[in-house]
Image 1 (cartoon, rainbow, N blue to C red):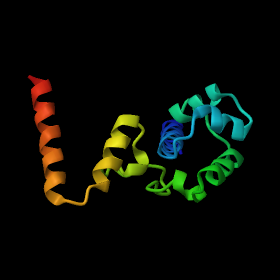
Image 2: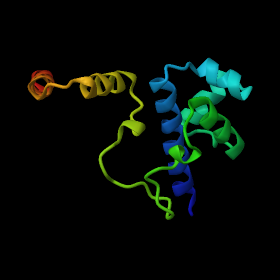
Image 3: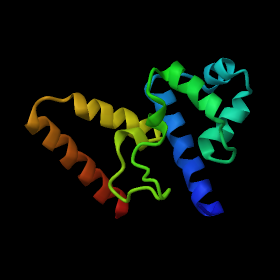
Image 4: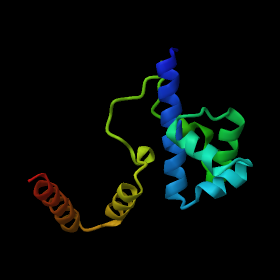
Length: 128
């Protein structure tokens, strides 16, 4: 595995950490306290700047109540991430995550369709 592939994995793992933290409404300070680190170090992990250790990933899995493989799902043995559409677990934008979660909670198909049409129209207006 080359340096670029290693860096790509660090970035994806960092995004998964951020996603879990945002979904569970946990602050970077709370995560830092759990790992006995600074919030700046958590920022570096989330951005893929620093590589997180296996023992720290294990502690995060316990904190977030997920399996440790959550950080590596959709990553085949060759280290290349699948090019499929982003899953909810890969979202790291706080607003996008809130929108997707709210959208998923809608039961009425017509309401869902109306939300999509509204978002598409807003995007078209902004592009003009």
